Image 1 (cartoon, rainbow, N blue to C red):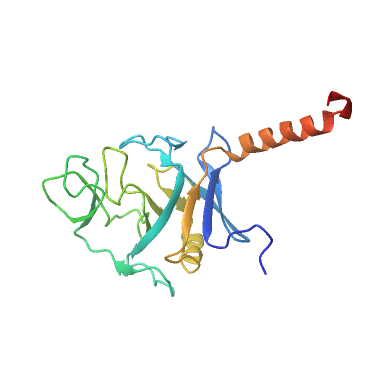
Image 2 (tube, one colour; image 1 turned 90 degrees about the vertical axis):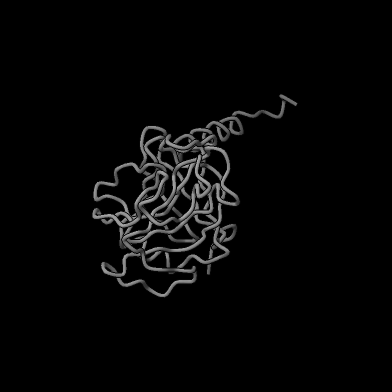
Length: 204
């Protein structure tokens, strides 16, 4: 049974502080360590700033390396990654922020990687309905480096944690990335509590 006020279908991501990319992702009662973009979490994200976009977004589909892992039972659409899969990151391209065949005439990030970061990928529905301006592309949930190094704007998890997470999310799940770090939120809450404690009825 879930706790009152907990939304079982919202994946909440929040950085620990403004000085680190490390954070936590929470879905209902579950929580996993994660890392966000080296550019921080921004409400005004643009292409190339390495920031994770603040806001709330749908989760579209999964891609995975079927030569490296066995995908568990999932509810999102899923397909294996091929050697010629890429994700267009060129704002001038008509295929901007779309899955493309590589090589082609536009700049694109290769999905078939040797470092394992894209062995399992969840596509976040950011700037894709339709893609506009230079607001950023290729925002994914994917596998983190062993040291949880900052990403280029995605949210990354250990492989074991992401394999667990993909069994729990579905078409109705939303990703909510909070702009304010946990430390900042805690400071604001403490200040608010102090104001309440200092309140005197004679002030009315």
